[in-house]
Length: 87
Image 1 (tube, rainbow, N blue to C red):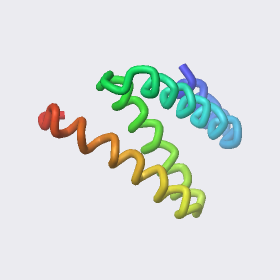
Image 2: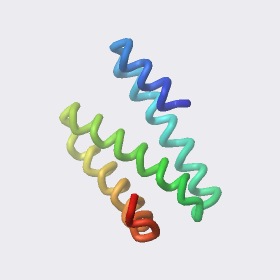
Image 3: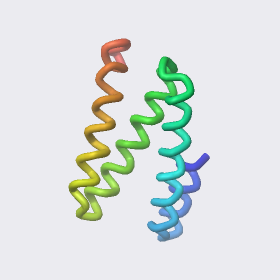
């Protein structure tokens, strides 16, 4: 739901609100993975959050934050790809 609220905020030309919603999504997904680290769907969702925040930071010129999120995305995505290389 947070991602949908973020997309709605972006559509309303409110990037600060969108960023807040995306960050809340990241926090929730981080907590879900901490609760059940073996849940591949939760890890994929967390990877998506990092990926989204990485591109937002990159487009804003904040390459250090972008790198942090891209590296987190990659760290989550690699083991998922090993489990199911067709996705």
